[in-house]
Length: 100
Image (cartoon, rainbow, N blue to C red; front, side, top):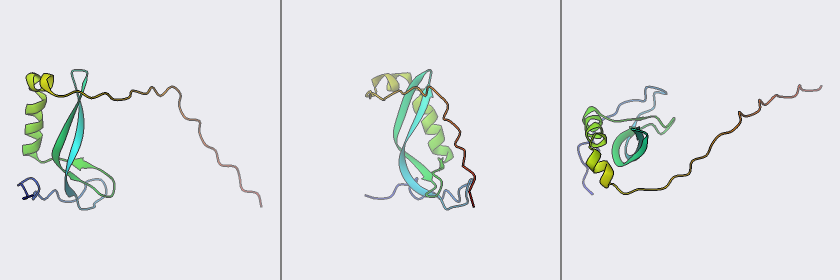
């Protein structure tokens, strides 16, 4: 499969940990007017160390166009996702003092 211009884009180093970003195609989720939208095949830079993700400006503009297209969103396939309520805060873990 030939490389596209977005595959050749240099994402530089991760702003969080300084590791070189790697070009990937990812799934990215967005909440739009209370609805979960998942975009697939998004060209992005992904940090292999910490998982940070970035897109270049052209991809960002294209994402905005897609998310603003109500007809395209309405015609897109649907998928079910589990929704789990996190009821309680986790209990703090306390370490027992070491005995000597």
